Each structure stands twice: as structure tokens, then as C-alpha cells.
Figure 1: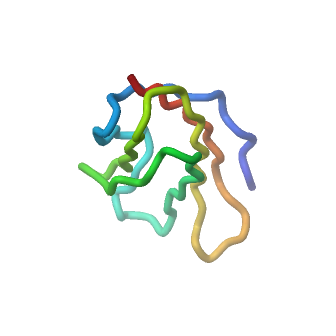
Figure 2: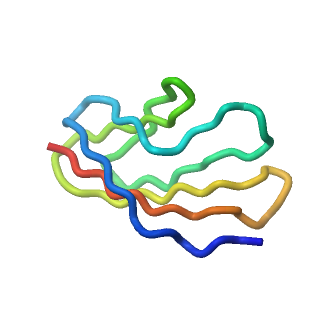
Length: 86
């Protein structure tokens, strides 16, 4: 069963530096997070199991994180994340 999108979470960071998002994986389940990133924001790997992103300009961006089983077409969680970069 798919969950409705949750209330937007907020994270802050600095231009050009990796920012850890409040989502990640421990490798214990088949579920994986995917990100829809706006222009100017790019994936920057992982750290301690958490997904990282990097923005090349200051501003506010909304990212969409989706948790799903790769074998299923239906996501478990859709989570908007507001990234504010200074």
C-alpha cells in the first residue's frame, strides 16, 4: 500500500558542499530510495548510509525522495524535502 506524501522535511547546506538528506539505506531490506532532483542540484553519493546531494547555487529547492521495492511498481513512501542552500 502506498503512503500519501508526507509533510515536507527541511535541510540546509552550503553551495558546492555535500548535504546529507534524512533518507538512506542500511542494506537490510530490498527497498531503495530514489531522488527526483531539480535543475542545479545533483546526487553526491552516500555517507553513513544517507544520501547526499550538492547544489551549485544558493536558493531553495524541493527534492522528491521515493522509497520503493525495485521489484514493485508502487512506491512505499513519497517524501518532499526542501533544500535551502546558502
